[in-house]
Image (cartoon, rainbow, N blue to C red; front, top):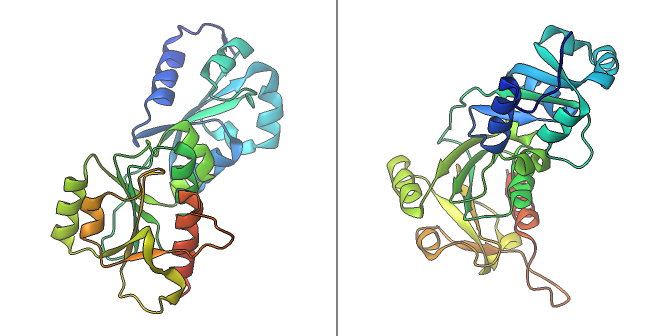
Length: 251
């Protein structure tokens, strides 16, 4: 099999474009577990690129790779494509199926959350709860490499809708009569909550500024996680995870 040695190879150029500009139609993955999660979710593996020196190893350890189209490349090309310091020598391009965004189930609203790690953490937590419909408003790209990695496969178990502005989200909210609460340090004690009409949304906001006033003004209420030892607040990914797991267990 021919080994790709040039970064100008048409396939490599296209793969790099997908890596740098994932938009939800195609996704670049370079982690075997994520690739397996993608397959389990019903996503289509369009092709893989495998390091020439690791080809036999990967084909033997993961026989499913023999059933998809794959290309072989040298270390220079693999390092060029990789978004990590120590490439595993296996990457794939996945075609994602469009998922239905069900307005009759619990949901999350991520308002201007800029850190990819926080977005990925929230997606990962949401995938383990009933809050697996996620709305992003002017937030980090959920299909970027950092978000996908930190979501640990959660990206394949959630439905995502993206809005550029709060106004667009509020129009959508009104159209489908959605209700939500806001995470805010000045809100009511979350753990005093005993009943909320379902479906319900939870809105969490920017790492420094919190949820915008536009979003906050139309919420049912604001809730907070009480802090001890003079701690002001938690990381937004941690806070969101606590809130949705607590609400999920209210029944």
